[in-house]
Amino acid sequence: MRRGKPRGTPRVAIIGAGMSGLCLGMQLKRAGNGNFTIFEKSDALGGTWRDNIYPGAACDVPAFSYCFSFEQKTDWSAKWAPQPEILAYLEHCAQKYQLGPHFRFGVEIAAARFDEQSGVWRLRSSGGESFEAEVLVSGVGQLNRPALPEIPGLRHFAGQSFHSARWPRDCDLSGKRVAVIGNAASAVQFTPHVARQAAQLHIFQRSANWIMPQQNRRFSEAEKRRFARSKLRTRLYRWWTWASFEMRWPMFRGNRWLSRLVRSAALGHLREQVRDPALRKHLVPDYPIGGKRMLILDDYYPILSRDNVELVTEPIERITGDSVVTRDGRARPVDVLILATGFRTTEFLTPMRIEGLSGRTLQNEWREGAHGYLGICVAGFPNFFMMYGPNTNLGHNSIIFMLECQTRYIMGCLRALQKRGLKYLNLRREVMEAFNQRLQHELQRTIWAAPERSWYKDAKGRITNNWSGSTARYWWRTRRAKLGAFHAEPLAAGAGRGAAAARDASG
Image (cartoon, rainbow, N blue to C red):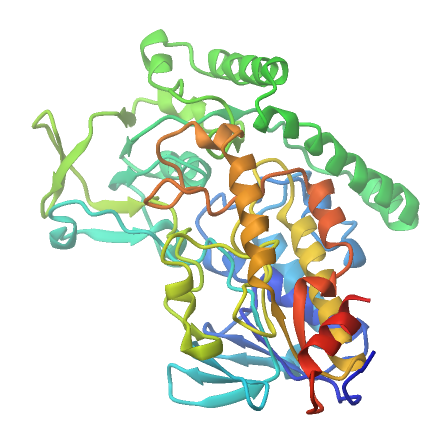
C-alpha cells in the first residue's frame, strides 16, 4: 500500500487562547512541536476566565478536576476555585510551557479558506492581515458571545447597563438601585455580592433553577503540603472527584431512582435556606431536574429573604429610561441594569467565515444545526479540528476531561499527517452522518430533551451542545484517531492515490 512522501511538521493555527487553545499548545510543546500560532482577539489569554470578572465568579467543578491532568495544581485555596485563581493558573501554564512566542494577541480571525491544491488554510484577520497554516484548530468554545435580550426600550435605558461577562472593573454599586435580568449560573454567583452593596436589588426570574448545596471549604496548609508531596495522593483524589460526578450520569439518561434522590436533595436545600413558603413556591423549577444546567452553591437562596432584595417573576414588558416595567404595569425605578442573560451558545464559530472544499462554508453546512464527528471534525473541511465543539458540553463533569480527549485525538491526526506524508485528512460524510443520527437519537432519550427551551438547544429544538453519553464513553471513542473515518490525500501525485492512501491510513 502506497504512502505519501515524508513531510515536515505541519503548521498549526489555533484560534483562541482560552483553556482549549492552551491545552493543545502545551501538548504540542511537550511533543517537541513548536510550529504553531495561537491567535487571540483579546489582549490577554484566559478565555472565559479572562472575560468573567464579576464578583463571586468561580468554577462549578471542583478545582482538582478543573486543571490539566498533566499539569496538576496542588495548592488550590479551596475545593471550588475562584476566577482570579483559575486565571493565574492558566497564566502559569503559558509561562511554564513557554507559549509566549506563539501568541498573537489582538488578532481576530475573521475568515479562513482551505486551498485544496496546496493543502493550506488561508486565514484573514479583521484587520486585513493574512496567515497560512496546514492545520486549523478552533478553540473558541461555546460560551464566549454574550446574548442580549430583545426587550423593548433596552437601548434607551439612561443608567449604567452591561452584560455580566463584560463587568466594568470600576463598577461601584454602593447605594444603587440595581436590576438583574436573569438568574442562572452567573447571576446566582454575583447577586449575593450585589445584595450586600446595593440599596435595592430586583432579580427578574424567567424560570427557576435546580440548585444543589456546594459545601465549599478552604484547604488547610497541611493538606496542600500533603498533595504537593504525593503525586499518587493527588491523582487518586482527582480521579475520585471525577468518578463521584460521573456516577450522576444515569440521572441524565432518565434513571428515576437517582433523579428522585437528587431532586430530594435539591428541595431539601431549598427548604433549609428559604423559610417563606410563598417565596419557595417560585423557586421550584417546572422541568425535570437536570433538564437545564444544575447550579451548585450555598449563598444564593439566603439573599432572597433580605429586605433590600426582590425576586420578580412577572415577565418584563419594556424598559424605560430609568425603570423596568413588568406585564402587570408596575414600574421599578433602577440606576443600574445588569444583563445575566447567558451566551449565544448554538452559534458555533460565529461570526467567522470558515470555507472548506468547493467553497462550502460552515454556516451553510450547519444551516440545520451545528454538528460534527465527536465534536472535533466536519466532513468537507480538511485538516480542520474543533475543541469544545458541537455536542461536547457536559451536564455532570469537568469539561477539562473532554478537552484533553480532543487534544489527544488532534495530536493523533497531526502525527498521521506528518508520518504518512499526507496533504490532508477529510472526514468521510457517511461517517459523520451515521454518528450524528445515532447521537441525536440518544439525546432524545436524555433529560435534556424535556424542557422546551434551554441553552443546550437551538431555535429549532435540536440539542447541539451536549454529549450524549458519559465522559468514559467519550474517552473510549477518542482514545486514538481512527483514520479509516477519513479520506487521506497524500502529498505525492499518482494514479489511484486517493484509494491507496485511504486504505493505508485505515490500516
